[in-house]
Length: 183
Image (cartoon, rainbow, N blue to C red; front, side):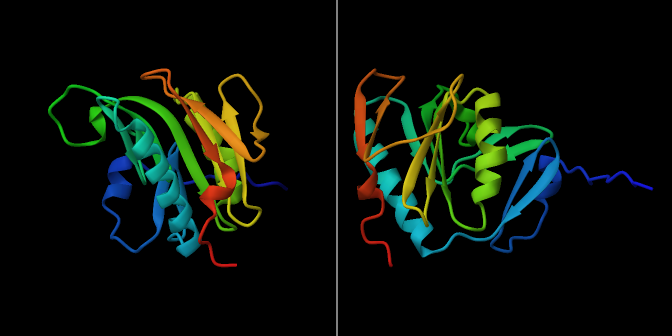
């Protein structure tokens, strides 16, 4: 006899009450996903991406780069992309509710998060209206791009990204993301 599996569903408020323990807690339709704290290689790549985008977007009023970012739809969805790129609104708050547009979500995937990032988060970002998602695989040292209405594809040695705010184009050399990584 087959028994149905019932998963406990959580809310954003419930995970906000968890004590800090170094893990990342995210929700997809109330299902809790826990990933380990990022390692050194992850931090180096996230910092490189943040620096590239911050320099490129500096002239654009309201554009921001955050790492990690937060994408939240209460009560049952919260994802934390390693890098979130977008535009702030004109509100006066200081929280994530000030984000008017989310342009790009980037996940840096190691062995502990690759399947979750690829099979769940990527499509969830697109479903909530983020038009483009990048996934950087640390071990393979590759970058994958997924846009709304397209299949995910591996990029070659460089990737081009056009800012929705200005229309300017940024070229990112994939090898530059891995400069300084320990072997």
